[in-house]
Image 1: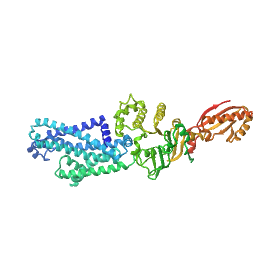
Image 2: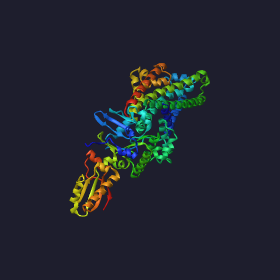
Image 3: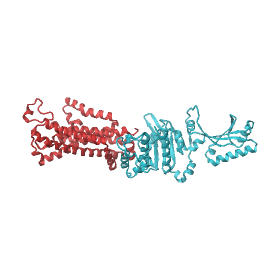
Image 4: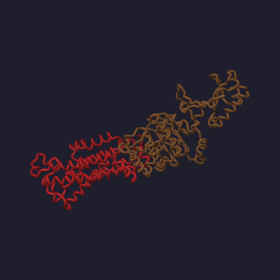
Amino acid sequence: MIRSFKAELLKLRRPAVVYGATGAMLGFALLATVLTFATATSAATAAASPVGGTALGSTLGQLGQPGGLTRGFTIAAGFIGLLVFVLFTTNMTSEYGLGTIRVLLTRQPRRARLLAGKLLALLGFVAALLFAAELLSAAAAIALAHYRDVSTADWFTADGLRHLAGDYANAVLTATVFGTVGISLGVFCRSTPIALGIGLAWLGPLEHILQLSWSEAARWFPGLVFDAVASGGTTITTYQRALVTALTYAALALTAAAVSFTRRDVSI
Amino acid sequence: MTFLTTSEPADIDQKKGAAGANMSAPVVETRGLTKRYGSRTVVDALDMRIPPGVVAGFIGPNGAGKTTTLRMLLGLVRPSAGDGRVFSLPLHSPASYLPRVGALIESPAFYPGLSGQRNLAVQATLGGHPLARIPVVLERVGLADRGGDRYRTYSLGMKQRLGIAGALLGEPTLLILDEPTNGLDPAGIRDMRALVRSLAQDGPTVLISSHLLAEVQQVCDWLVVIEHGRLVFQGPTARLLAGGDELTLRCEHLADLPRLQGLLTGRGLVATLADDRVHVELTEAIATSGASGINGLLGEINRAAMAEQVTLVELTITRASLEERYLTLTKEPTEEPTWDSTEVGVR
């Protein structure tokens, strides 16, 4: 598994992956932070708004609280989850598309180890990118706080730093569940268009459409549950419940994928 | 269907100097190996045997089951029935023998955005091979000066060579090459042939799958022929080719032909008259007996003819090409048989 992990890290150093994933994640984090601060309004204005608040749901007062430093990053984490899903899915399906899966399996015939090493390497890569994204988001938040007259006094307290660490952990957990489901779907489908078509259609429009007719959807549908983990819980489902449900989904997907990966013929 | 099999590859023993004990432990051996996809049987009860040290050609038409068989040997595809051993280790435990196997299956598969070196580094890391092997194998396949270039910039021939470099990373004792000349131009095919020959000299057993029979004939000393997933022939290449060899004799005077025919028939040879010549079927034993055996036969015939005052003006051995023998084995029609003629003596 260690060899598989190291080999995957070597492979991830492809310019397209490094620049693409880094650019997208940092870009998302920066954009979400900028928009969070740019669209934040005073509490009075928010209350008077017909939709009950700003599009990104923050007021200047909320941004001044201990969690304000990473508010933009937290919002970005949900979107980054989808990005991670795409990254993990295409990483797996491209092995089949390029035919490199044949080479990998003749080098490492113990397939479960190969899959585990690949997943851990991808998670490590994403965790590093998320760390960079959070740092960038925090730096942008500090700069924007001065521009919007947001008090930063509570950001650098022990509570503020707990938020910083907790939001990073939630982002990593969200990436883990999105990525695990993504790589599992890649193993099942073996085709990039099919896997992404199914995955993005379900996690994107379908879940949200179904949610309109079934209020419990946010407690059970994987995409909505994963988003709840990223944002530390919602009004519909608690963080703890969302986390347990998300990890259950991830464990089931990974188990099924491991069984499929170790047993199916590779005739590509 | 003609089934020609041999269980006594003595000539390979002699050629490679292999001990008899080695022959009892083939590098690859399958028993009733079968692969079915639904109701379609792709590989049908294949009993294959590859002795150590040979360059073995695995031939058959497209769709014969060659690649599926190789995939089963490499643990990529599970057999539906039957069993096999590689290095005497069971086929269902590929992790036990694959570290000693290098393989290029179908087209070479690499990451286009990585350089040749980086691609090999991924393989070496995964296989637990030292990275110091990378420049060695790149040099071996003639890519030392292009190793730093991205794979997507390589020509097809370079991609194939990089594929072989990858297969050589672990210093394999069994090298499996599936259609290594696919898509190559004539110069690329020639280079690949030379490379395979030089690789074989390094000691590993080489198993090459191909449907280019001329290539196989030039490189391989052992053949496994399959059709519709079934074994048609396996044994030394010389043994397969021998079945079609023919000796042609012409006399100075046509009137002497019947006498010459009688003389040869009297010595136990199958001789027929046609086209003002006498044609003699060379038995497998004669054809595979080497130059000394054939020369001995020719000398004997020449002396007997002279004793009967028959003057020979032509004495030619015509060897069947692998293509011809293959088509005979698989009973496919051929309009214009191809023959490689080797004139061995004229008096």
